[in-house]
Image 1 (cartoon, rainbow over the protein chains, first blue to last red):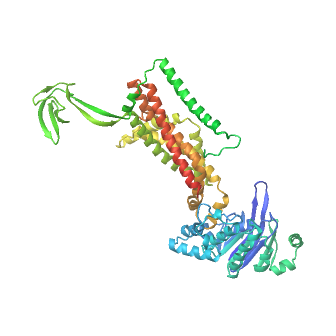
Image 2: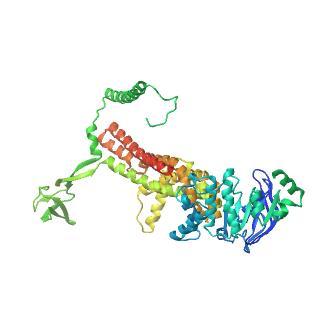
Image 3: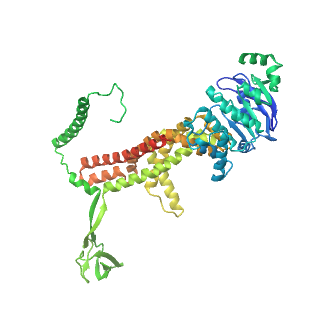
Length: 243
Length: 338
């Protein structure tokens, strides 16, 4: 479904940082991939390259066979099939919850008002927040806001969902409610790429874990292999520090 | 006292508070009184009773003959009368009310002879005309200034060189020269050229008002560009990312996500800019547009009531700018509750 071929990415601000060095990977439909690693390891950059929020200076990313770094590609079409959930939620504060979940449907999917509102309500019901449909984002807790952000993405019927540390900005008691929604999605067969520090989530639902450090993929494999019997010393050190 | 005051500023004692209020009123009266006394000392004759006619007056219409002729016929035309005078060039018809003329059929007329005199009805005075022109010009310039500013502001924050650099050039050129000079260039350089081109191609020429409006909107637009840029810059970059990652185009995310949020921070400086625009429109008198300031000057050349008319002129500007800032405060409160 997504094929990453030898991508490189360097940031020059504030000083030269090699965020991605020769990264390749293949994500299959229906797979749940969890990307973990210390901060500054390039895992968020990797994720943000997948829908071209960052452009790699070398290499290719094929999404369903389409090279997304090709300037001729209509990136908006590709993005419409790939939902992204952010660490800081990024809900639209000037719109109600319902507005947040309907606006992309309206502008990108061109759905009718009745259709998009029915869809939005069904999904808000699913993430357990339908009673807040007419509230504004500022009146919601962090966990509720993140569930709305997931609903906003789901309303677009995406083929893939990208999660960029979805629980890192949450109070501890709200992490569970967001992870529950993500687990439900994983069970339903959604293709997911998830950057997270939630090791429990990785163990429970990941089909594959990718460990990154200094812009490279150090190790990847099943959660069982990764957590119980990793091959590399760097992985062992990382696991020792966090567990 | 619904305003918030800090403990340092607050006068806890009501007597002290009210005597301070009384002191303020006394101070204002003292200033007005002192000015009035000074003007009387230099023997200025205040004639405020003449002021109303600069807003509305009853016009007296007098018609004079402009050639040697003969009254050929006087006939009824509805409730008025047609006085038809024949001269070397043919017939001229004057339609006048009954009883306003003192001519009979067969009378001769010479140039300058009074044909008729009657009360024409209420007419707007000079200040009313000037006020209306200022309002009209400011309104159109505000709309055009917002359009230019928003388009320019969006161009200013884009990554495309042609858009970004055009916006920067526009802002820097306009902000770097005086408005008065820009008005002169708009009228005497561009106006002359454009009017000549229009004339040569068989079109009518444009009035100075249009060049004035153009100069004011281009000037204001440049400042609005910077205000819009700052407003957009204040929005968290995650907002654009959230919008774009859902598949919205750049312009969809600008129009639906960024600009509505930016509007809230933009509103107060924007209001200041448009208050300046109303005041700056007083410069348009330099290119023969009869706005409020020029109308006041015209009024003074005939009446010599300089003190009254300049004070009235200032009060009228104050009235316009104050109304505008009230409207904007209302809008701010409305957007703040959301």
